Length: 143
Ligand SMILES: [Ca+2]
Ligand SMILES: [Ca+2]
Image (tube, rainbow, N blue to C red):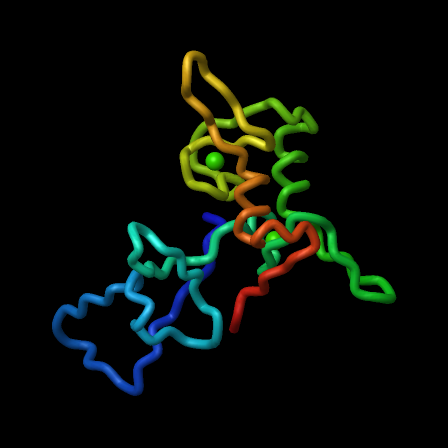
């Protein structure tokens, strides 16, 4: 299972016959709910994408733990990456994984470097960037 959330097309009705092509990268494509997609700018063009970063699969993207009094803890996705690497901040897992938030085929807590110039980006820092650099930020999956 990946760390991206399900995305639903918002249509009044549709036919079950024939082939339908839907461009979810077009921000004008109607999707169910509010804030269902993240919109970024690529070469000055707005592009919609699915939310990623829910490494622990709890329906929320968080960099740090959250707390809702009196007893509810919302676990950090970044810490879940640290834990799956057995607490080694420089470790790396290769292959398909829900903890691979930037979807490069590798799970890393910190950036890796292969000389002379290859950087393997941190999945934890990717979560931080999804939250626009707010360590206490949170995005909740709709539905
Ligand atoms: Ca989560
Ligand atoms: Ca990765």
